[in-house]
Structure formats: C-alpha cells, structure tokens
Amino acid sequence: MKYGLCDLVGKYSWGWQITIGTCLMIDFGDPILKIKDPIEDDLSNDGEFSRLGSRRFVRAVGENTLLIPHHGWVVVSRFGKIDVGNRFDPKNLNNIILDLDGQKVKRYKEMDDFHLFEFDLDGKLMIKKSIEEGFSMLYNGNNYFRSLDFP
Image (tube, rainbow, N blue to C red; front, side):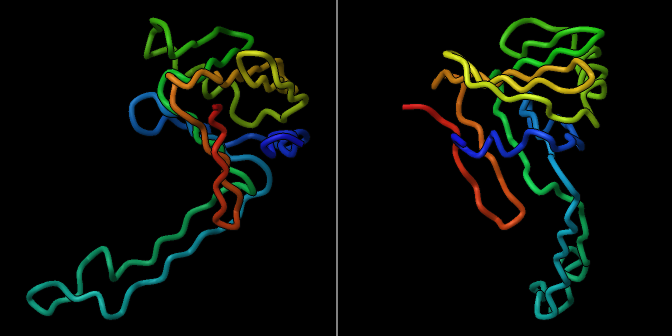
C-alpha cells in the first residue's frame, strides 16, 4: 500500500477546500474532533491574557487529510474539469470542488505521471508527481505526515 493512499479506498471524502492560493485540502473517513484548550499562562506584554490564547479551538478533521500544493492537481466531476496547472475559471473552481465533496473513494491507481483517485459519483482526482509541482502531504489523525514527493 504505497504512500498510504490505498488506505483511502472506501472512505468518504469531505471538507474539500482551497487553502492558500490553489492548494487543495481534503479530509477522508470519519471525523475526529481536534481540541486545543486555552493556554492559562498566555499573558500579553501588559499582563492581560491574550484573546487567542484564552480561546478553546475545536475543529473536525478526517481520519486522513490530504494537502496538495499549487498546480499539482486536476479534479473532474460530471459537470466539468479543473486543472490548476492551466488556465481555468476561478468561479467554476468552487462548484467543481463542491461536486466532489462527499464522494466515496472507489479506486486508487498509481499511474506514470500522477496518482489517480476515482470516486463513486463519477468524480476524479489526479495528483501530479512532477517535482516542479511541489509535494503533497498525507496526514493521519495521529499527527503524522507523509510526504508524497518523488525523487
């Protein structure tokens, strides 16, 4: 099971989002609550508790989270295709991403130039292997990252 990507087969994809620029982040599997409690001794310079340090942060993450860099991916739905390495309509980007949100990974194949995920509602995700495209990271809920870059 190379790079742990085969482990995503049979899991639902959710939380598809564009992060910085055109980086793509996707959660897979059951949600896990990540909780960061307030820092009690987080004092600002004037002795007051800082606003951020006094907050509790709660968010859901998947059993696995995949982070794919700028220009390193292509998504296809029944209604269109986005290749972030080429010209595309930014308005269409969110619609295509939403088309794939909630789809279950049906098949994973490692191809010569990319990783291919096929989803149960006809969606596809291709992650390019080219070094120039940067590298992808697969995160599991236990704070472990695995780089998917290629020598």
